[in-house]
Amino acid sequence: MTLPRFSLRLLLLAVAVLCAWLAWERSVVTKRQAFRRNCNGSSQFVFTTEASWQSRMPSSRLAGAVIPPRKTVSWVRELLGDEAIQSIAIDPSVREDDAATAGRLFPEANIYRMRIFIPATPQIDAPLRIDVPVG
Image 1 (cartoon, rainbow, N blue to C red):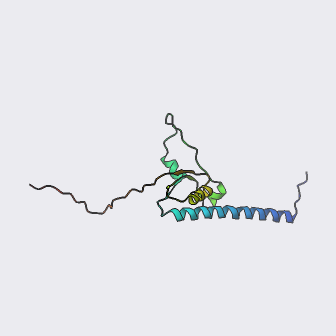
Image 2: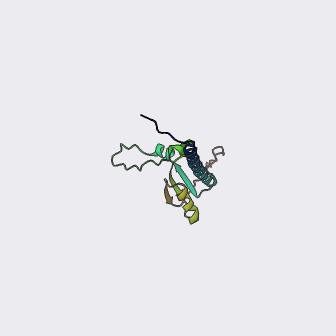
Image 3: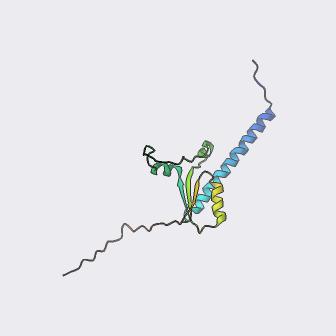
């Protein structure tokens, strides 16, 4: 049995195609990370990663529980630093093209348009004042 022979030109072409594909995957990961970083301080987008969603989901053994499937990204994107986004909550005040950008960058995510309320957290170290009636 003879092994197939390949030319050096074919090997270089295969390596070039592989590098182009990896560069494209890296650019997708970079765009996704930049979008999340830009929206991080905003109260208009709430990203739920697959890992945090999985930790909050009830057990599948609950009777009648319908658990949506886990969202994933390819193992190559995970190696490049990407993570799966389970859902994105987008405030209705967000422009439609920004919401469309989120949908295009995160095709695996369920996208919801809803009013987002960020609860005010009291300061823990603030003194507690209690008024007690005297007399």
